[in-house]
Amino acid sequence: MSDINVIVGDMPCLLKEIISNALMNEPKINIVGKVRNRRDLLDLCARKRPDIVILDCTATDVEEIGNRLLQQNPNTKVVALTEHGRDAFVYEFRPHKVSVGELSAPGLVRLLTRLLTGLK
Image (cartoon, rainbow, N blue to C red; front, side):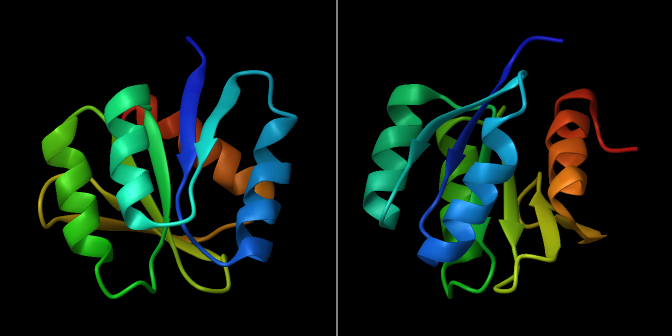
């Protein structure tokens, strides 16, 4: 499997750093960008065409942004984490989302790898 290119979306700084630290030591995962706001997210995703975008699930417009990202690049997977970072949802087909339940740092890495081979 080729490397997984990830963009970490706007979310609380602490959560963004925890996610970044969990992923940066994984040899097959490249963080190709981190953003501060939704507009920057859409612009960066248009330029970088990431495999996966990680968002904050508690944002009021997460489904709208997820849909816009999927319209921009249907092959991008959108993962939305809850505010405490323990649970996640995967947005695949508008407005379908799949709960992947509780996550740990290793669980997040496994999830990102599974997304590119299909959730099973």
